Image (tube, rainbow, N blue to C red; front, top):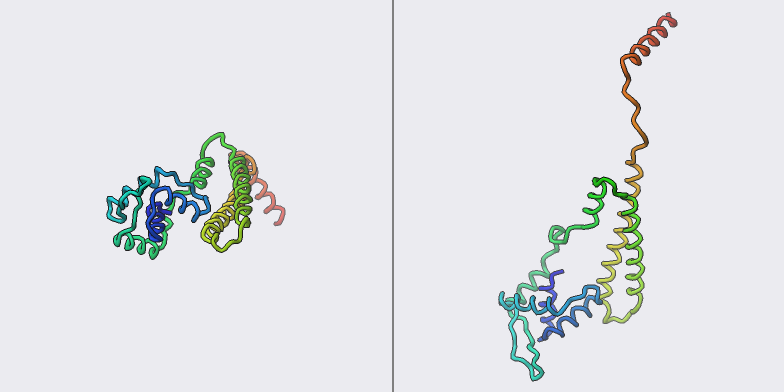
Length: 200
């Protein structure tokens, strides 16, 4: 998810200052994506530079709220209307790690797979616990985020199982038999000739 569009979506609800935006972002995602205040203000500066938000006068407490502009609303509407491409998502570090493990001498690939499965199962249990921790209607946004993370973890476990099965299937079964030498070929020819003579 783009932090840029996340903040625009929050500002569409109304004017907010930095700490309010961070709190609202974490509430909407169930704190599954921690956001530090530096990221918020850096993103706000870029949004202001691009004309998508505008700063308002400071409050008496010294807090400067921001509001979304018409250009920001148009950008946000386009983001909501545009499907997320697979190429826009981060590379799958785990798949790359296992591919490299297979071609790196001295790496026990099965141990890598088993360690990852254990970690993913622990994460899946924690996500499931969080998911069923509350059934309030206002928790629906972050529960949907949790559902997505649960499904991804379940898919990762299935993929790791597939990787382990593939490793077993493609494991060399032992040294290949030696290639036949000239004497072996001569013996086979002699045996074949003797068999043909016996049939006559």
